[in-house]
Length: 175
Ligand code: HEC
Image (cartoon, rainbow, N blue to C red; front, side, top):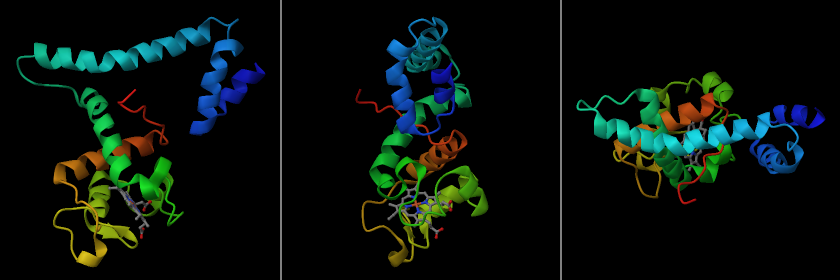
């Protein structure tokens, strides 16, 4: 019971990794917990092939939005890793602690819609450089590679989704 309450009190990534590690020995006597974990894992694995099946089988491409997001999230995560993680690792903000990518800051700063996140990412804001191809003025824009519009759109969706879920870590595709 003590273990269980420690786990449910977990909100950060590090702690969750620890909890997973304990799962094998700690929960051995409780068949319910490993079952649930397994179930979740199977679902995550199945999702991409289910999506592929849906797309192939359906004559009119009518993939539900929620399913579409399961595919995009990996691409979003990899874009985020390339362009944003330097300042926003784990959804934080190493330059400006009051402007993280967590919902409470996004709301307070009026950047809580995908449109606003898109705008900030495209044109920059304060010490945040813009990444859009037509970002101006130059001084406000990144000196690194620019991002395509659809990439920024995807990043905005990704940030919004991650904020909604409290920035869980995304398993990398290279596993
Ligand atoms: C060089 C560091 C840096 C990089 C790289 C960077 N940001 Fe930022 N970001 C900032 C800073 C600083 C702010 C705060 C700007 C302000 O409010 O004046 C910010 C703010 C934001 C905000 C608004 C957050 C809030 O609570 O107000 C969003 C959304 C955002 N960044 C998204 C991104 C995305 C997406 C990327 C990758 C494409 C990215 N950032 C890359 C530094 C960075």
